[in-house]
Amino acid sequence: MLFEIQRVGYRYADGTAALDGISLEIAPGDHLAILGANGSGKSTLLRILNGLLFASSGRVCFLGQELSESNLGRPVFRQEFRRSVGFVFQNADAQLFNATVLEEVAFGPRQLGLEETEIQSRVHDVLTFLGIEHLSERPPFRLSGGEKRKVAIASVLSMNPDVLIFDEPFLGLDPRSQSWLIQTIGQLQGAGKTTIVATHTLETLPRIADTAVVLSESHNLITVGDLEDVLADRDLLRNANLV
Image (cartoon, rainbow, N blue to C red; front, side, top):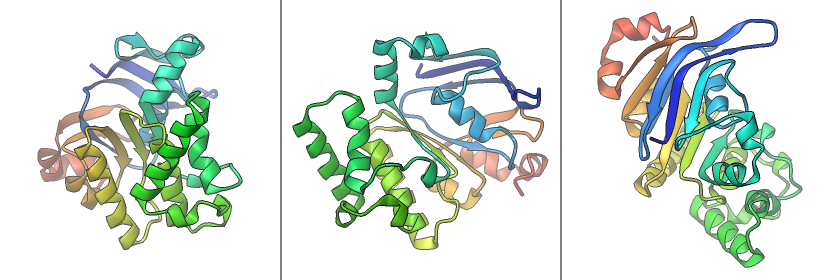
């Protein structure tokens, strides 16, 4: 199993609950949609899966090893995990910090200690794949919202992760950019990537996911099931405040 999430809870410093007793298994090659109303805990769950936050209770394992602060402090585990799991933030501005797009996309592979020739090859391939090679010398902060989203995705893909986690990737995108992103996620899935997408944009789901995980406004798990069945259950969607 890729991820094993066992009775996971998370509380903020003031005691406010963000997740409560979440149990879930994610296998290699899964195409998962994490659904829930705003404030249900979707982003918190994604950050726990990416090792940016650690559960207040329960246990999360990645490939059989606990995803804990102490394990991520071990160089071998940390490098393997960071190479394997990529995270695209909801707000691209939180992810982009280098002077040019070229440097941004090269940053992750450099942190992995790859040879410079390999880094340049990856950067070229990713920029070409996403159709943004013309942006390579531009500073990210001067790009449009859609362009920033593409660069953020490129900065993750250049590390060639097996798992791609997207937090509300369609937020703020125009229809053309949404269509581009749906197509891109489909291509990545066709290449064998595991994808985990948190969203409340239900109309995009049939093209990017086959399994749905639904969180309640009480921060617990309502159901895990076939996406088509979940979308057909209007009472469930109403209870989750998704329709």
